[in-house]
Length: 533
Ligand code: FAD
Ligand code: NAP
Image (cartoon, rainbow, N blue to C red):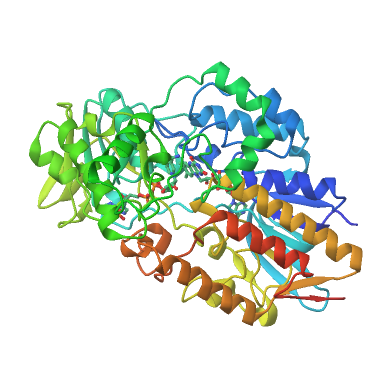
């Protein structure tokens, strides 16, 4: 093979790309990865904002594919902070000698399927072209930063930063007046930390969010030892959970409407004390039935009223949507932060930020003078990193055109008209509704097995059929429509990006999805067309 020919190209060197590269290389496929960033880590390379950390527990948010790696790595906290996760990604890259097959600071800008050769031609910047039989997009579901277009953006004389593109040298916020725009998970993590550093903090909130205490702290060494002693069983138990996580905590099998209110409250109190995502796992219908949901929602709102001293501020911080339809936030002293004299909540739900001026932001007719504006405004999630690349399949059709009315995939892995293209944790798979590392490992292993199957039988291409894809999209929608998820303006629906089609993108429920993927593979990749050169 020449220097520019490979069996596979992997785009991205986050946790998805790293493991994909390792797995394909181990199976004897010549593979190269391209990464726009300067090093490995993906999310954890880019997100260096104050307070950035995981909200899946460290013993779960880690690879399971290597028992040695699992045993040798020591986590220090219940939820690891960004620097620790980045060190872990770097350790993985070193341990499995991955870096020499990764081109850093190299962005994939286009990929065209050559129908005659049955190969992808991948164009990178700075200048480069690579031809590969297979193209795996490990580009990340939350890697395309969403910076809102606000008039006067260029006129602001101070510093602007997006949480997902935080400068490596950091930003000195001491004695500064700071604005944070956005109160999703990133904002909820950053706000309490920035409040301690900054002289004055203005929080621009469009939609209040539910947040549950994370109860972070040093990881109990006995717990770490105990889990490591039974890691296989622990991983297996997690994979059977609806979101591939939380096996340490009990899960309920009753409706919240079947038991007395006092019992529901007691369960929620216990889960609030424990902290974390287990909060909504006590009853089966919190995310299916509005009446049941209201019990959990009201519980959190009561807590907000208890924590926040100013009743007007507490009311503004109280969400109106059902709980859980936007991703639940986990926090460390988020609501408490609004009791600080240097923190001011600016409600922009009715009067959006009008413009930026050289001195600050204008909202509701008032100018807020600040030195730094932090945009915690999220991502063009799930599709953004894919459609920003000029991907062309059969007949030169662009992926962004094929998806103009919303993403269409088969299993979140393949796209009709785009042979040999794999979308890792793509729309139509559980992805962001699961512990993403668990979702990544399942996809990597399925894709690697698929490529080995094709090679052993002499197939050159695999491509989802339109029928299988249509049926899958209908299935993903039907599963979502049986829940409360589609009832609010979340990024799961693309509602956060102006003009983005409103389609529920991830598939709810990890274990049945895994079963389906295994079944498809066992039936010689049912729903895909396999062809020889
Ligand atoms: P990423 O880590 O996003 O990596 C994708 C990489 O692809 C990036 O480095 C990017 O630069 C590169 N790339 C994209 N396009 C191109 C291109 N055209 N050319 C070259 N390179 C490209 N998930 C959880 O399960 N639990 C959590 O607690 C959690 N916390 C999170 C916290 C934050 C702040 C964010 C933003 C996300 C969080 N996530 C969490 C989701 C997280 O994205 C995943 O857990 C995981 O890190 C995704 O890995 P990935 O490799 O799929 O994607
Ligand atoms: P997000 O959840 O999309 O939140 C973005 C926030 O910005 C929302 O409050 C949004 O308001 C607001 N916003 C967007 N545009 C705005 C505008 N023009 N004016 C005012 N407000 C605006 O993004 P995120 O917080 O970065 O989180 C994205 C996802 O990344 C999370 O859901 C999670 O999956 C992951 N994440 C996880 C963690 C963690 O704890 N481990 C931390 C960060 C991120 P609206 O709600 O009104 O749109």
